[in-house]
Picture 1 (cartoon, one colour):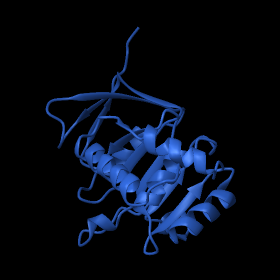
Picture 2 (picture 1 turned 30 degrees about the vertical axis):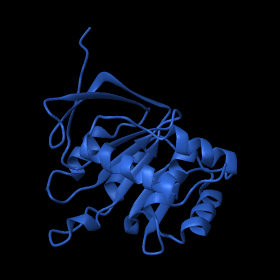
Picture 3 (picture 1 turned 180 degrees about the vertical axis):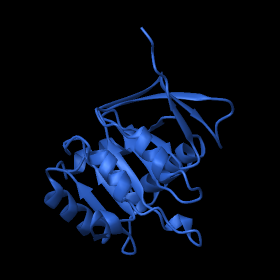
Length: 201
């Protein structure tokens, strides 16, 4: 089966919009990701490639942070015509799970936060993690959330505090998206307030 550029990528786009409008809700990209896996390009995780195919074009800049950076950058550039740049200049920063510990916090620190005149010129960071669920590890509040949502992002990265520091001068800040090995998508807009639930034993 071949990925339908119109139908399948429109479906992915709707899921991205829905996930961004409802932070804490995990969107399933399984169907579309299966098609990507069948087509090859196995150097790049299917969900990451799906998001790139959906969001990138020749006007977009991006940075891949991975042990396979060169190969994945080449695939994305060839398929989307987006331009690879350094972290500080990237519209999208893709952090794969094989990146070193501390990479996410560093990327958040370096990522462009936008300007007061154009806050939407900020970066979106897309992060591959092993697993996500709605376990009560992180508490989410803010626009798009009726009362409160809970989510667990399974990663060794420490990123919540770095994100809070980056987003403290609203409307400046960065957007975060996570994808896991089950092809689930979580979107955390800059307006989402995150509190770590600390279990006291």
